[in-house]
Amino acid sequence: MGLARTPQLDAPMHAVSILGNPEGLIPLTFISSLLLWHYRRRWALALPLVMVGTGGLQLLSKWAIDRPRPNLAAWAFRAAMF
Image 1 (cartoon, helix red, strand yellow):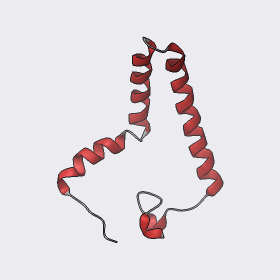
Image 2 (cartoon, rainbow, N blue to C red):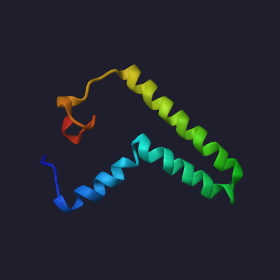
Image 3 (cartoon, one colour):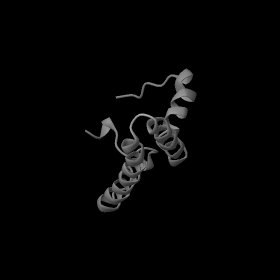
Image 4 (cartoon, helix red, strand yellow):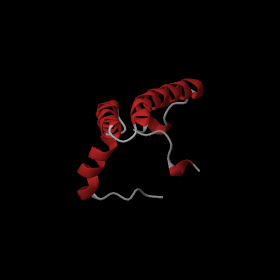
């Protein structure tokens, strides 16, 4: 199965993928908490805690599985594995 790649989507997809990195998640979480503060203060306080917990679970699961990325790919699991 070949990868479908469209050069026109490289820049937008790169921008979207930044949201999954700490430099994207931290500001996004902060802005979301600020927006929630006016409507649901409990959720606004819980959101950063949930995000920190999610990051911790991700690190814990990566440590527990301790599996190298296939073929040194930039992303871990591919549809071609099956």
